[in-house]
Image (cartoon, rainbow, N blue to C red; front, side, top):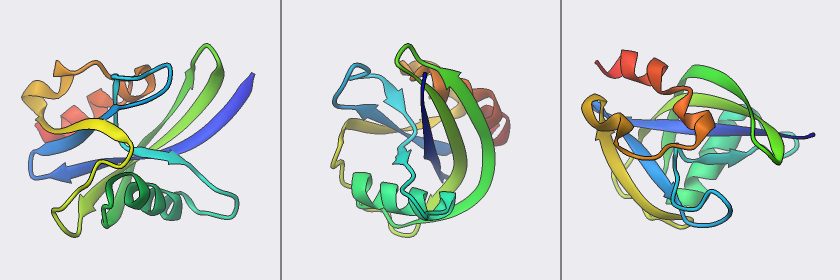
Length: 129
């Protein structure tokens, strides 16, 4: 089975986190924490800063790791490294996503999360509450 390793940023603003809606592919319209594949020679933090800049025009500070998820999708095995992030500037632009919204603990489960992203929600909720 093909293996993919990615990083994701849980961008926090007070008691809310940013969720983004995929605009392409077989998981179109599902929600995720933004991020993407690491390139050869990049650290996880470097890859996450680059991906968030490409996807959201966001300048972020990468903080503590939240956890790593191992998930089997039908087409591949995913290793997902999640980190807390904060924005250095409030402006965002959706370059790849269909939509984005800030979610509090109370409405974190109001969107249809990708399965791997959903598996990290308990750790995020415990920090937000």
